[in-house]
Image (cartoon, rainbow, N blue to C red):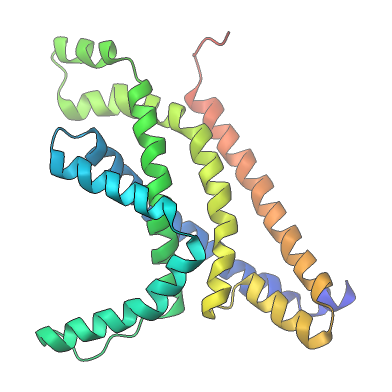
Length: 230
């Protein structure tokens, strides 16, 4: 492990920081896709429901690695051909950071869609009807009744999806983004100690998982305050 400590800045400070950045930014994007997808699935509009159903079915049926490679390589070709055809732009280059964050966010958004949809359906409809009967506006009903319970019901599944999403960030190393997996693998192969350096990356992800568990369990206890348990 002395070699790992010697390269700690490249592995943990740079690669690890980039991994966390990709995970958090893709989480924001995935949450937005998830909320929009859940709204569309719960909508009375058949077009919105059909679009959301197609989105979740197709994305969950395609391997993450395949979609990552398609976006990074074929996506750039399609954008440039479209720009050339319409004359709207000359050349667009999709950098690995954008491709990684966008693809992971888009993929995980399909899973968060089901998380938020299921959480909303778990809220007793009588509570919303009571809010309407009391003269509460829609924004107030959302803030006082829907949102607190939506978070509480969604957190268990959200936690699982987030832990999967953190591990999915390792895919960005395939498209050349120098995250912790890319750097650990490159240095390990150079020094002929791949196991040692990849084991260090493994420990890094375990630490992230432990920290995430602590934070999300705290949120679960906070949003479950006052709820009687069996």
